[in-house]
Image 1: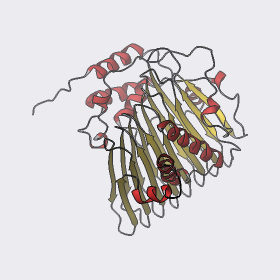
Image 2 (image 1 turned 180 degrees about the vertical axis):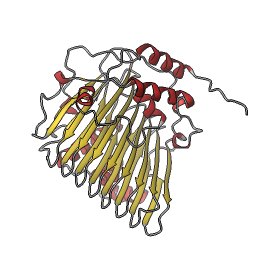
Image 3 (image 1 turned 90 degrees about the vertical axis):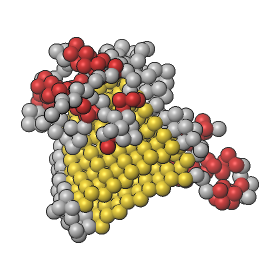
Image 4 (image 1 turned 30 degrees about the vertical axis):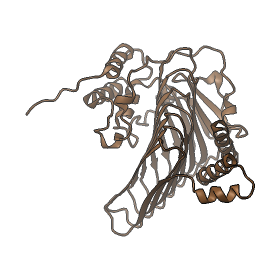
Length: 434
């Protein structure tokens, strides 16, 4: 048998050196977990087009170099983070350059029964929690995050608690030179609790900084969680963000990803429905231009019977942008009475834009209702003509049609203030289009 040795590219060599140099100084008493994760990452290196799940996002080619780990931010507070989502009024937990920044955060959680703290401090007080066991933990990007994670937050919602306002985990890159952030956060929602969690990503346009972020979300029995991921990354940024979700019986889980920024972005979600009578919605909206590459990838595992899930993703593509959707619904043999439906739609505003869509069903049960669909096309010329015949200019007609297209997905967001903020962000993107 011939042994094949992986030839490391420049980025992989830099990552290996970074891990060797930083290993002893990285925070948290998780050295063994880090070592195992990086050893497993090195076996295959950065994911590439030969890996089916990364077929359309060849990270080995797209990530030509690996930036050094970002250092601690200075004490100057950045621009108002709340302005990212105007009018939402969330409780802010800020992660700057990969580390929890309490001085840039609200001093305490808004509600009794909810704590927001530094990740590694929380782990020290909660020895029973097993970090790195989330769905998707063996993905190559997740392994790299586990090896190099520099910090993050832990949000703990106690049994029966209800958050009066959303909790906003803001990932901010602050610096004058490009660097890399590796953030890991944990959200534990105990049975019967209700909470809305927002993650946002932002940074300067002029730097090709890199972000590898992961969030572990544990939803207890009968709990209700809305999770939103808002990507306003700098125009040259590369971001990979992983969400691993476990939902217990009778839980309600709603998730929405909204992306307008970044040069290369991959939002990947791994969800496991581990109890009966779960209701879930996972959706997203992306507005892309220039040469942006945005990938939304899902793996939804129906592991128990009597669960309902619905997925809806919409992407608007202009110029030479590339939008990717990969969605897989897995129905395990005993997960009877599953109801799962997935739809992805892409609107192409340019002949040079590209949409890659791959919805999949992997069904091992026989008493289920499952389906998927995918569409891609240009603006309907008849609808545009109808609007123009009513005295609306060609540009305004296009704007109205695009707004209606993307608005169908945004309407799925339950929180009225967040919904309005996302609609404003979509209008801003449309206004910049000219």
